Amino acid sequence: MINDRLSDVGRLSWFASGRRTKWFIVGFWVVVFIVAGSAAGKLSSVQDNDSASWLPGDAESTQVLDRMADFQSPNEIPALVVYERSDGITPEDQKAVAEQVTQFNDVDGVERDSLGPFPSEDGQALQVIVPVDVGAGGWEALGTSVDTLHGILQDSPDGLDHFVTGPGGYAAAQSEAFAGIDGALLLTALLVVIVILLFTYRSPLLWLLPIVSVVVALVASMALVYLLAKHAGLTVNAQSQSILAVLVIGAGTDYALLLVARYREELRRHADKHEAMAFALHRAGPAIWASGATVVAGLLCLLLATMNSTSGMGPVAAVGIRIALYVMTTLLPALLLVVPR
Image (tube, rainbow, N blue to C red; front, side, top):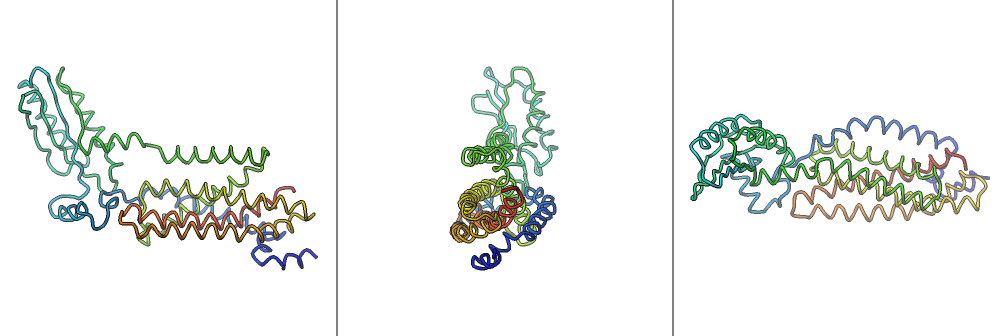
């Protein structure tokens, strides 16, 4: 009787709602989660954060970087070190600064000799230009080099103020300000979702199932993006990785709310929870897949963007939404059927 009814709601609904197949689905995603964990943790290692990756391909700035590659690295970012003494730079100051310039040249990432020191017209300041090559790490890799510069500057003569500024100084400050933002962003998003689910379901346990499913979807999508970036040339940067996490958590939660709401309604109509889930998937599934397909199509439109960072974000986010669709329409129903009615 139940099988006859399930045949009316489609094979996918029957498969995800089966008494035996639910265990297969749970086991499959557990294996995926374990295998994908290692690759997901390596996603940051394939990020492309160099200067050109954030600019339009046909921009004059990008063209300049390409032409500069014949003379210097396009990833070289100058850090300006400024010394100041209000009553005038002394010969001792000039000697100390000259010694520090020699130390600057030994800092990791400084491939060319620093320029300076250049005195100001009023004789109260000196300026040194330290060219730091950050490689593919982009501005995020500047922090260590600039910290080393600050360490060298601690030995400056008394009364001689010193500052690290310019593009290198700004970028290092940004890197410090946003350090750990990915973890904080992910934790904040999860906490917000948990609060929403607690208020929605009014259950101390039900919220765990969507969260577990979302985490599995996030790990699986990060692993797939890593493989595409490493072997298929997909561009990933710090921005797209952060947005990937937020999109997967947000979209996955939306799909979970819709499916669980429909499942609860069907439980009132059907005594058997497997039958109820089959009808819930049959009725909510098309809306979920239509919503996901719309989001994926919209994200892929970003491929037409002129900004390299924006055009690369589209396929990365689309992969996350696609994986979230698969997980929330297979793993989440299976988990809901594994727990008691």
